[in-house]
Image 1 (tube, rainbow, N blue to C red):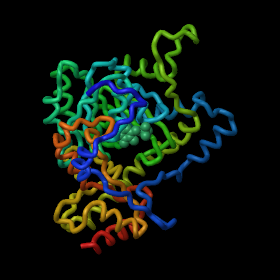
Image 2 (cartoon, protein in one colour; image 1 turned 60 degrees about the vertical axis):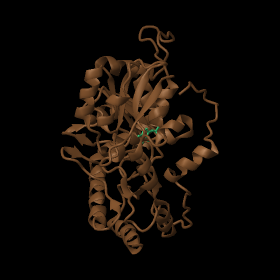
Image 3 (cartoon, rainbow, N blue to C red; image 1 turned 30 degrees about the vertical axis):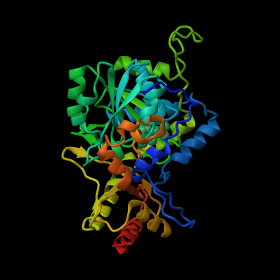
Image 4 (tube, rainbow, N blue to C red; image 1 turned 90 degrees about the horizontal axis):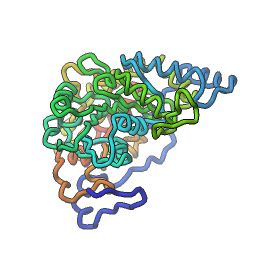
Length: 400
Ligand SMILES: *Cc1c(COP(=O)(O)O)cnc(C)c1O
């Protein structure tokens, strides 16, 4: 893969597009009614308004203000880590983490192909190369048994993503990292509060990266956080996220820093969200159980799993169709949309993205290709009601 520039438009040739069309959505269904069940909506029923009002009345609306520290402290406790830095968003969290471990051009970073684009673009923005690995069939996380084959002398780090709230196989991944002397970054943007062998995600690798976008398990509108137990990395990320201002002489810069600062307004929302984090996770888990009970006997649908030793937060309730289901994924989405039920397709894997496309690799990641073709998630908000879940499942069952 040659180094690309930002304004270089990537277009896939007609010939290759024909090959990959079978794996990408054929159309996006449109919902005509106002009264619809969204795929995900934020739950802001706690102290959010009160704390934000407090920022406005007191005038502390920038990245100075007491809610930032409080949010960082609360999130550190939640993740059982020593160091946290609140940020602009989850994508910047990954960039900052990679910068802090010293990723530079010509380095390679292992990334699951089945993830959201920001996991890989962070690597690309630092001039390094993301090297893709296929997904596991059960959890959709990176297939740890395929990581070693992707490692070269240039590999510096592995980014694991805890897809849809189910933690990746961290013990096996840490073992590989140790053997090859690699950093491990957890992209935990989809898994706030999820646990692997009773350890919270974000506390297991060298650095954890979180997003607080409006559809995530907890939100600040836009926002992110890095977490770590490594003092040096923790202090470095804190410094780099704020232009690397020198501690002794303010406008003196010895490092190339960023402005990735979160505002006090966002942190105020974050503090309120933290107060209800466990409640929202419990609601997601309860909803997942309701879905599982109603859909368990439906032929042709694979439901999300929870492996032994895992606490899955079910950020998104993803289902995977197989040929025993009478409709294609896209037609099922269309039928649900006609009833006012919004859904979302699974990710289109990174190896099929125009910006990372390599025609020799189209069929190299069969699990991710299948997920892209046949996966979708159903409405998954914490505030979803049993009545809504009953409706969604009965629409699906009526199609059989
Ligand atoms: C949402 C998400 C991100 C990006 O977070 P933003 O806050 O939207 O920048 C990164 N990685 C994964 C896996 C995500 O789901």
